[in-house]
Each structure stands twice: as C-alpha cells, then as structure tokens.
Length: 621
Image 1: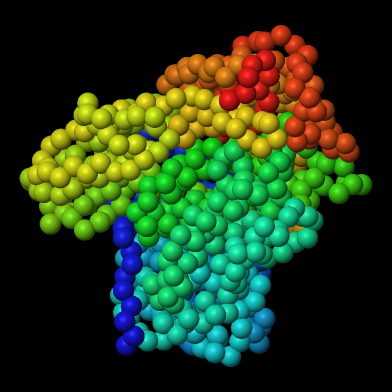
Image 2 (image 1 turned 120 degrees about the vertical axis):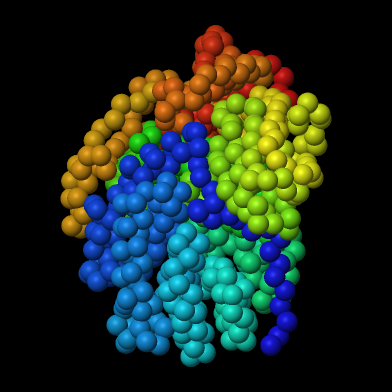
C-alpha cells in the first residue's frame, strides 16, 4: 500500500466531551428553540425529504441541516432532539443501496446526480459517529465512498461536486485512519484531478472583477469552503500543504474584503463596497474552514478569524430569536426591504428579497446550513495534541476527557468576548502530568496569565502535574478606528466590530409559496429605518462601557458592551434607484451637524446599522 502520513497536528474533541456553559449555552438553546431546532417539523424540504422516503428535495438540504442539528442535539444532551436526529440517520442508512450508493434517486438518475451530496452526507455520518459511536456508520461510509470511487472511474465530476471535491477528503481521512485501503488513495487522486484547480484560480485572481455573471469560480460559498482545500487534500494527493489558504484569503480580502473578516458574495464576489452582501452559507462554511485550518496548521490566526465571524457576522444575519435569517447581510445595512422588482437588485446575482429576514429568503440553502455555525464553534473550544490540550476559540465551555487513563475536567469560565478575563478551572481524578496551552488572541494589545506577561498572538504552554488548579488570563483590549477602503473607518475592540445601530419598524409578511407556508414566527420581515444613519466619526476617541451579558447574548436592545463615540451628521445620499441602500461613501466629508455622543453596538447585536463611516473633524490616522 502506498505510504501516507497522518498530517493532523491537532484533533477536536467531540460533543460527548464538550459541554457549553454560560452565554454560549444560552445561545445554543435559543438555536434549538428556533428555526434550526424545528425544521423537521415545519419545512417540507426537511420534513418530507426524499432522504426519508418523502417527495421533497433529496440532495443537500437534509445533510446540511443534520450537519448542525446533530452536534446541537448532543451538545445540549437533548433526548428529543437526539431521537429526531437518529430517525433521519436510520432512514438514510436503511435506504442505502446494496452497492453502496447512498443518495435518494433512481438508479437511472445516478449519472446526472451531482455527487456533492455524497461528500456531504458522508461528512454528516462521521459527525453522527463522533456523537454516538454508532457501529453502522463505518461500513456505510466505506460502502458509499467505495461506490463513489467506482462512479468516478466511469464518470467525471461536474458542477458542485467539481467545485467542492475537497470536502470528500474529510470522510476519506476519517475512514483511512480506521481501515486504510488502496482504493481510498485512488479516490483522493481522482477528486483532485477532476476537481476545480483553486491554485490556478488564485494565480489569475486579479482578473476577477465585480459583475452580474454567476460562476462556480466566483461563488462565495465555494471560495469560503476552498480555503481549506489543499490542507485537507495534501495527505493523500500530495497537492502541497503550503500557504495557499493564507495567500488566497489575502487576495479575496484585498479585492472583496469586508470589515467582519471575510469577503463579499451576493451570491458571487462583489467587491469591497459595504453595501454589497455576503451570503450566510459563506459565513458558516468559512468558520468550518478556519476550524479545519487550525487543526492542520496549529496557527492561532485561524482562531482569531473564526472568532471574528462567530461574534459578528453570524449573529448579525440571524434574528435574535433565531427563527428567521437573511440570505445576504450588508456591512452598511440601512434597510431590509423588498427592492423594486422593475429594476435589477443591488446584489451581484441574488434576487430582490435577499436581505429580508425570513424562512428562506432568495434560496433555501442557508435555511438548512446556518445551524452548523454555533455548534461547531463550541466544539472548537479545545483541541487535543500528544500529551497536551490546546485552548481553541475562547468561550464558556467545559471539557471532560481522559489523559493517561485519568479523568480530567477543564472549564473555561468567561463572558469573553464581552469581558476580558478568562479563567480555566482544572479538576483531575488524581494528579496527572500534561501540558495545557492557553491561547492569547492576536487582537489583544497585551495579556497576563496568573499575573505574568504573556505573548500576544500565540500559545503559552503550562507543563505541570495537575490536580486542582485555576489559571486566570487577563486581556487588554484597545478600542480604535481601523481604516477601510474609500476613506471610511470602522470601530473595533478585540474581535468585536462595532456599528451605529439604526432603529427600525418591522413589516410582517405571512404567505404560502410553492407549497411552503410562512407564518409567525418563521414568516418574512422587512426592517424599515426610523432613525438617522448618515453619520461620521467626529473623533477617533472611543470609550468602552460594559454590563452583564443578558439572556440573549447578542441582544439588539441590551448589548453587553458598547462604545461611546463622538459623531456628526454628514452629507450621505441614497444610491440612485435603490431607496433602501446608501451610497458606497459620502460624496464629501463636510458635516451638517455638530458632534454628538452616540452609542455603538457590537455588530452582532445589530440588524440595521452603519459600520464603515468617514472620520470628519480631525486629521485621519
């Protein structure tokens, strides 16, 4: 058998070992009580899917939903949710064909079936195994992947399968670790050869400009997924596990970057304007890519990037009760309204309703896929190395594991990112030696660990015989203005981006379309502004104000931290033909009002907002 090494530097813990606490537990409960926790009861594409013997969509939507619903159920240890997840897994495994084909279509339809769904359902089965150790999963995944290898000997990847070939490397790697076989290397090679070449795309990336052409090569979700492509493929296909992810992300951010750390895509790449959108699927898939990239590289910068999306972009594009969501979010979003249907929408390829909050605005992929964001973020809180535990994303989470056969518990007790103190409480069944690597975010200006200075942007290792200990980390975070394109600025503190909230009134739309009912609480909502939005920073001075985290961590009325800023009204017009969209930037810096004190909310606590604004009244940094 050809030699291949396991290039996993770190491995994540499972939902059996991780338990959320504090604000993260409350957020996951809100998710379970909202749309994601109820899709199998209300949404035909899940409730009546072909995956379970129904007649509705039988491709990506059920696997997308299960990818978030399964870890959510087990993180919360919710028996009803676990039972419902098992119902779907049982139905999927029952319907797998004798030759291993696992997707719900007739035999004669296989040649035209986009096998992206095969990659996705195998990933989901691995997630389910990590939660349950269900012995049916390994043979089912092996049969499905073996069948896929046979399929690729006769056919060629196309469409989404060609664009997302690397996603299949994840279940292949899991299976290879358990029972390595030569055909798995053949399958991996076929995927690389037949799949889209993102390295070549990156080499010619400067040619990609904003336009209204829909392409797989500029599709925002494909690109968010592809950041991890060669990190997961190199183990088998020798693609070169180099700095592709860093370099490609830098290119994407240069030409299409957003203030919250990703790039625009509504639904394809759309430039750096703060009024262009970013699809919700891209947010959760980029988070997953960042999690995988940290596992593969050990570089903590990927966790900084993960936190920035989790604390800002993810909650901003989902309603506070998590019953509705947007397809596209805008950094400067002064209205979420149905755009004039007589004109082209502002988005590159999406429709006139793409930034409404609703059940499935524009398209239902985000409805099914958004649920993976917070559960997988919770699972990224700790990672295991050899004789060591690494802190990943910082959040209130408990870990229960074994080290050298000794039961070890570690609890991260914190309200980070809303506060700056993080305590790690370690309890061991009996004394045991191991290393605990504490992560110091790169967004901190300085840090103390048990009163001693620690290096920012890396890991501080504590090697000792642990018994019952508490380690405290204190972070110093500075609020400041950051420069953006076109002479605009953003206010940031640590991994929190801040916005001027725009008050709004809601217009509720309850109706039925294509047999799918929208009714409260999962109907569609327009958000129409009732307060001013045309402001600029009158000063670079920002003052932080904190309060306890509410029951809703990303509350739109009671945020746990705000920045007080001096701001002035500026001359800022609406875009021609788009009454709910402001121009990319004001035509001049001249103010029309005296400086006044304004409170900036965390971006994730806003639905209508201004985030990128000019600095007027003093010399620009």
